[in-house]
Image (cartoon, rainbow, N blue to C red; front, side, top):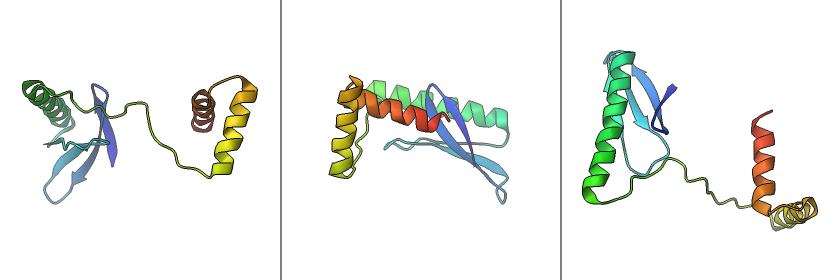
Length: 110
């Protein structure tokens, strides 16, 4: 499995050996956006076309298209860890949000 992107939308792509075709789906959305192609060039064109169709469909309905990531997510943790993180953030002179964001950045960009 591999990924492709277009206009900030990330898609996962697989190859169906029996059908001899690539097929993909845009990830991390409630809406379903799929595409397929027999070559990489065809696949890229199909991804762009599917996303453009989705954006046009949303516009025609007067709806905001769903964004893959909003920058917000809920984290459930042990209350003691929540308290410790809040205390550490206060000591560092930053918000809990800034503290957690910094910790995530450090963990991911090792």
